[in-house]
Length: 139
Image 1: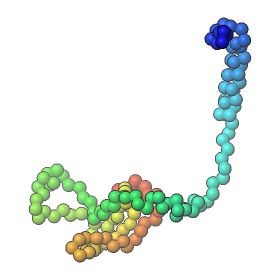
Image 2 (image 1 turned 180 degrees about the vertical axis):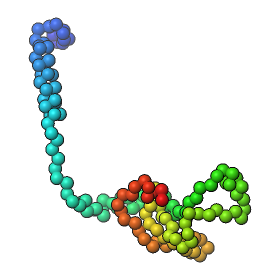
Image 3 (image 1 turned 60 degrees about the vertical axis):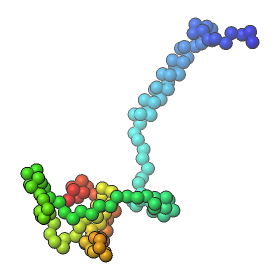
Image 4 (image 1 turned 90 degrees about the vertical axis):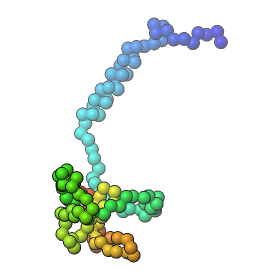
């Protein structure tokens, strides 16, 4: 191997003008494509059906479930005054359904029941799967 394989930028055979022409042509094609109106396919009316086999990989996933009896707002002074036997009044009436949250989404409503020596929740209504807005999530 006696040939020299190094490339000299000024050596014969390099055509900087041709390379610049190719780059300019590629840039012009990109500009034409960017200025052309976008074309979208028609969306179907309904979502594709869920494949139960595809969801089966999620069955063992553990998610936090929270039960909300009600809410209230208190001043720091009132909170510091709380002690054994204090009663905190909530924003819900007795007998009103409680909220069941899965993750951070309100999933269902229910009523408090006693199961043996523990509390439980009997689901009375599962909420729709439609996305909820931030106002409903805070309600």
